[in-house]
Image (cartoon, rainbow, N blue to C red; front, side, top):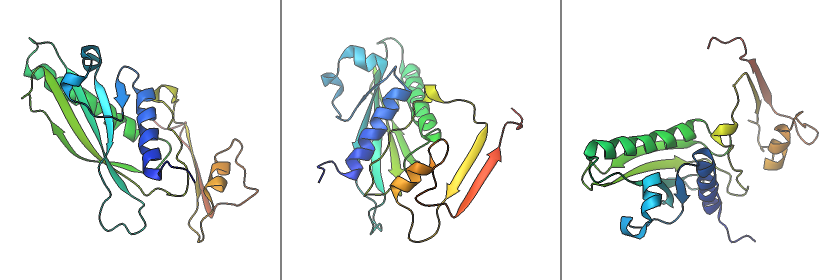
Length: 199
């Protein structure tokens, strides 16, 4: 049995994918005080992915909460506006990343807190995220980096609504090119051509 929990796998996958999406930032799983960070890393901006517990009323343990904490430093003379601008840029990057994720559980952004320009030259932002539902028995797959996305010209969906549901392995076979339905077929399908959509 693996010592890596589904929740830890989810957080690690998110951190790796976030780092691939925004290589100009440093992404870690260990939160440190500003004084324990390298000045060069703080200038780049650091994202730290931290577990924040499990929500109540989830008997099947299919949801979890986590935080993305951003830390950044600006010049001593740049002023509070520069801090706020840097924090909002980090928030925009996390939000854009989540909106474009192609794999894994649904992610919802909750409350966002900022330094309110009180710790110049340091800035920080804390973004609350809820993930789920996710299959606690299946390994999670890293997302594609944003740089690898192409124009969204076609949407194809295989829908699994019957019980019992198909296994995760069967779902992965549906994603093959061409799709593999030998071990189980979807209950319904969508195939939408978006190439003629207005830009």
